[in-house]
Amino acid sequence: MGEAMRTQVAIVGGGPAGLLLQQLLHVAGIESVVLEQRSRAYVEGRIRAGVLEQVTVDLLDKVGVAARMRREGLVHDGFSLAVDGERFRIDLKGLTGGSTVMVYGQTEVTKDLIDAAGARGCPVLFEAEDVALHDLDGERPYVTYRKDGADQRLDCDFVAGCDGFHGVSRASIPADVLNTYERIYPFGWLGILADVPPCDHELIYSNHARGFALASMRSTTRSRYYVQAPLDTRIEDWPDERVWDELEVRLGPEAAAHMTRGPAIEKSIAPLRSFVAEPMRWGRLLLAGDAAHIVPPTGAKGLNLAASDVHYLSEALIAFYRTGDGQAIDGYSAKALARVWKAERFSWWFTGLTHRFPEADAFARRMQTAEIAYIRTSRAAQTTVAENYVGLSFG
Ligand code: APR
Ligand code: PHB
Image 1: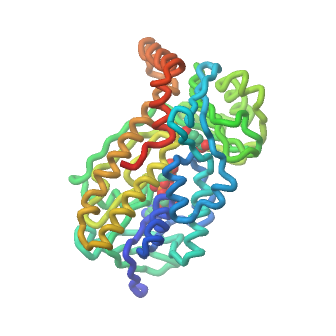
Image 2: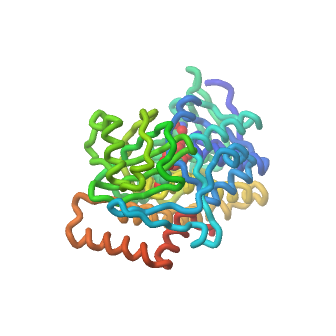
Image 3: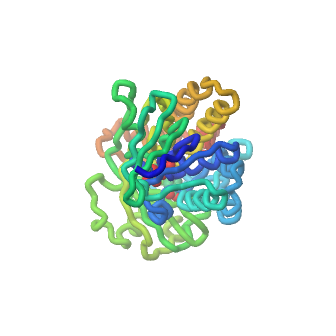
């Protein structure tokens, strides 16, 4: 066992939740150590979604990690919904009284946060293996791990479980304390990244007889597209040309006319899931981000929820260190979950609206068509879509 280290908050997981939490604590003068099981190159190379809510942008501003996003990110005032190739626009800015979203890859957010940690001397330990949490129900929890072949121990006041859906943190909560809620969807998303200009200046979400499709982007020269695919599909079944053919059909003639094809620089398949674990706190363990909940990617709420969780969590920890009383810590779970459930609802609903469900009967399909037709012509309906898409304010 190496020499025991001590910090105020041990953060397990160096994804966006853990890294942003570290910066929020740092600007408030609270020390933390991030323990990440993967390498820096792996974490920085992971391709994820790319739409930031205003409140997420504001948090990056608050910690002084917004400069590159301001330069390279694309502000979007709206997006399109397409039904069997015919499009209409949701005017986010007009419907919400001025709110917009920022298109900037989660991969880039992660890199910027790691760079900031390095520049500010905030420890992020990559390749920390076999992380285990101890004495979470007491006042002196600690974390053990193995680094460069040596066993290590990190003593702390709190453990922030930011280690994603498959991490150790949620699994450290006794089963009889934890309630979980889940929906598995009967399809996945096949994603393709290519260095070609996007087919439109805004995102297009399409409900098509052949299945959902999404046209997104990372910049004016890099496109990100997705198609709904069966759960048992294999990546070998999807040569680039098949993906492009499918996108042209599903996104419709207007998008197809402006679509530039190019070799995929990344191609992957992801299942869709809704999941929430309650409570988000057990003793001195506080969960945030994917460690506590998963949303289907429709609407890109995953990273944004991780950001809002760590906003609430940092406020609770700051209050604790300022006053020494644990009331804010006690309130963290309920406060975070109130926003989580609303985003869960929106992501579930938006998935239901835009995808073709293999088991849907004729009635269910008519309901879907009617709902889209209603949204197309009702400003009230469009307003609820826009309000949720740009992100709900912190309650
Ligand atoms: N020990 C240390 N680190 C771990 C462990 C472990 N046992 N298990 C997982 N991790 C790390 C992962 O390698 C990953 O880097 O925790 C990190 C969790 O990061 P994310 O999965 O990105 O989760 P989060 O930070 O909550 O961000 C949520 O990311 O998963 C997407 O779609 C999701 O956009 C959302 C956002
Ligand atoms: C993405 O660009 O990866 C993306 C955008 C919007 C979504 C999901 C993913 O709803």
